[in-house]
Image (cartoon, rainbow, N blue to C red; front, side):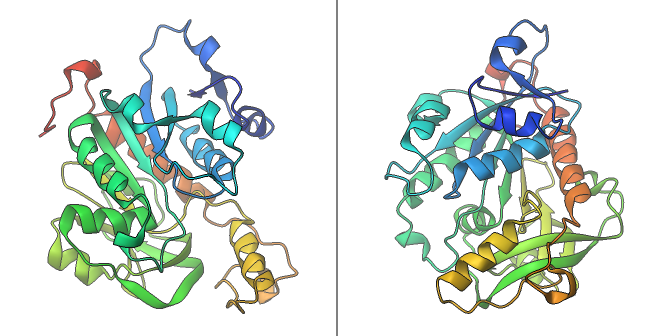
Length: 309
């Protein structure tokens, strides 16, 4: 089944060129089916690129997904046209009275910024508090994981001395966990972060189940037992060239970045990288939509139980 988006969203033609099944709102309204309502809080600077990446992953589910885009930063964007933001994004006060089946909170390039120095930190707190009563299941990605651990569990910001960038091996810890159903025992996923997520910290200070981690002991995928919240510390949504674009951007800025680990063929940045994580990224989002959203959400969202216990 397709994802459902506004007719004029640039991602429609972009994804159709990849043979991704995208259904516009005008067509979806004639179908007798209740789509899943998924809200994406897009915190990344290049919003159109990030939209394409997440919509691509959401499109692989057999479920129809009605996607809405949310922004909480009212400052002028240097990377996304104002017309695009005004046309395709809603503000929090427009949707705060609504209920959603799922919420995705993306990463953000804020790894070296203290939480209280983030311009929209109060808005992040507001959305997470709102989601407790208005969203069936929330998926946090990369920096959003760090923000959520602080807001929901009081865990202080953990920062690495050097940026973690590259494609790393992970192993699943619970072979029959729903969120990793269909995963290989060992799988690859990209990371690009200063945030640190030692698995021992998650185990000691939360009741979350760690479902996959790196060989070095970093938590990659973990979730609450009631499926209300899930966390992925990497970037399974990344395109094949995203890490390369970040690397060359930092080179041009004179930052002398390390080569992304296990990414460029023969560790030569002149070689074209290939995505080696796409299948597990797709599986992760299919499993989240099915087992954490569709299987537990009420058919009539107006009758949502605020606690969802």
